Every structure is written in C-alpha cells, then in structure tokens.
Length: 314
Image (cartoon, rainbow, N blue to C red; front, side, top):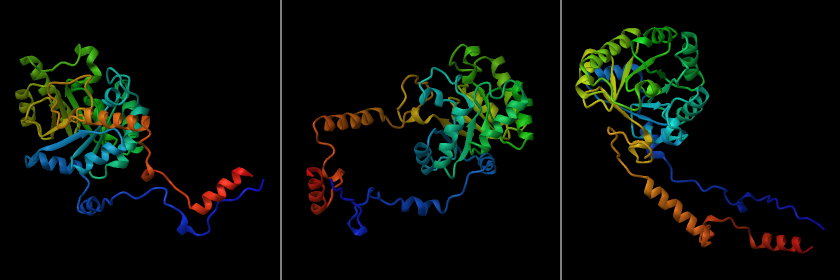
C-alpha cells in the first residue's frame, strides 16, 4: 500500500496550532515603569509610614497575578504544605519542596521582593545547616531573602546567616512550625509576661540583623508596642492594624482553602463556587458531546481529507 506523506511545502496552508491570546501589552507598557522592590524600599516605607503589602504565592501563575496587583512582597511560605499539598501542618515540608515552589514563583514575579521560608529543621540543628539552606533559597530558588521562625533563641543563627550576606526576616508570635510545643494554632502574647517576652524577642532579632519581623496572632496592642520600638518593618498577620505591613495567604483571601479559617483572615473573593461551576459545566459538555465544538477543533483541506480517506481504502 502506497502511503502519502502529508507534508505541505506551502506554509500558508498550515493552521496555527495555538491561536495567540489578547496581547498583554497594557501590562508590558505599565511594567516598563516599575522597579524591583528592595530591602531599602521596605525600610523607606517604614520610615515614611507607608504600609507594606505582602501575600504568599506558590507557583508561576499565582506569582504573576500577585505581582500585577503591585503587592510589595511575596512569601513562598511553608504554608504550601497545607494549602498546596493537603498536609495538616507545615512541619513535614522539606527544603526540596520549598525550592521547587520558589523557582516557580521567581519566574512569575519580577518586581515584588521575594521571601523564601526556611522549613522546619532546615536551620534549627546548627548554624552551618542554617547558612547553607538559606543560601540555597537565594542561589537555587532565586529568592531575595529568607524567613525563619523563633525569637531570642534564634538570634545567633540569624546573625550567622546575615554575616554570610543573606537578608533575614524574623517571625514571632504564633510560629506554625512549633504548634506541637504551643499546643496548636493559638494566639500568643496574651499575658503581660508573654507579651514582654515577644517585645524582647523582636528586639533581639533586630539586633541580630533581621531586616523585618512577621508578627502572627499577637494582640493588637502588643504588636503596636513592638512596631513602635523597632527600627525595622513589622509585618502583621492577625496582629492588628498598627504593624508596618500586612500579609495573608493567597488561598485564604480568595476563599480557596476552607480546612482551617483563622479569625484574622478576610476573604476578598470566594472563588470555590465559580471554579466548581466551571468544572461542572466542562463535565456536562463533555458528557453531552457539546465540547469540543468546531471552533475548538482542527481541520484539513478537502483535498487532503480525500487523499487521506483513499489511503485508508488501499
């Protein structure tokens, strides 16, 4: 049986495999005037009392959207263990998993300051591991800085990382990597003694070289007192309105994650239902053979179609 090679010499007869989407020229033109957010910019915002915005992101598409919204900072948090991997806590997340997501985020976000989370036991055992893993987040993950949890007990580790030329953001209050020690996801610093310890922790982290500190699930007056005493920015999450900035989790503010709903989360959209509706519509159209339609299918010339049918008959 003689086979016909279907190889067109005239490229005008070929259909494009992918039709180009609408141009993102408006974003491209706008991006031309934007600059990368640096630690100096964040410090300047603190000094001029300009609030800092921060969101988490875990993949290219999410980071692209957050960056287009002109969010100042993006945290590739170990919260990915819960919202992306379905884990019950952040504790099992590994360095390799964090690095995988950091690289994806770095491809999508070009202007926000990128912070990579050091996962549990990547920095607690010794300072060598801490410096090495922090370096990996910058070198392999393309992050701008790293974040770690803990107060005074982490000061010497922070100092070692900073001395290696790696910017560090601290994190005190509710520290999710320590939920076993804390007895769960509970607000911290709610007694005078505990609040005073948080102030001491924050000051110790600043002295050790942190460029900023996350305050999580801390009473608003305590967060305000810490913010007033520090020369570096504070980023609140469930810490009241007086912090220098605020951070929330990507999936939380979009209503995509409902396994845990902290009191401090504000949902700016509820996307679960419209997404499920879209998936359901797709299922129904496939079941009823309404998708794909002609506009979503590729064709061939009548001449080639006839030749193809003849080849099958031979």
